[in-house]
Image 1 (cartoon, rainbow, N blue to C red):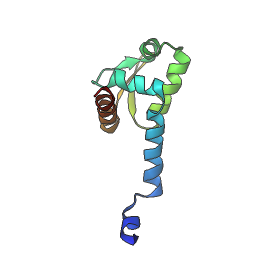
Image 2: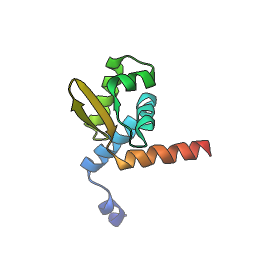
Image 3: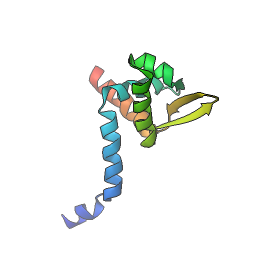
Image 4: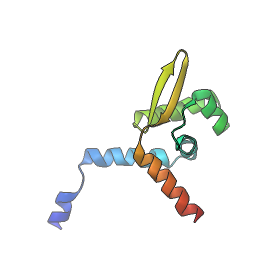
Length: 102
């Protein structure tokens, strides 16, 4: 038991993992990750359209995913474009979808 306990990740690592899983537990965020899974870039208005929500709501979800380093973004003039940054998130979405769809 002592050896197993010594192998556990640090509290910081576990907190980061928890944040990632919490972000992925939200249906809107899963839709965003699904839309970006193949390397696409979408602007906030495109994400809002995909989600069927306001730009403000889409922006909130994008900011959360960006803060968790799951998404990256770039500015082009007044437009911000988002893309998937995390290979782990891409794999988790793909594997979860395959698992559920059988």
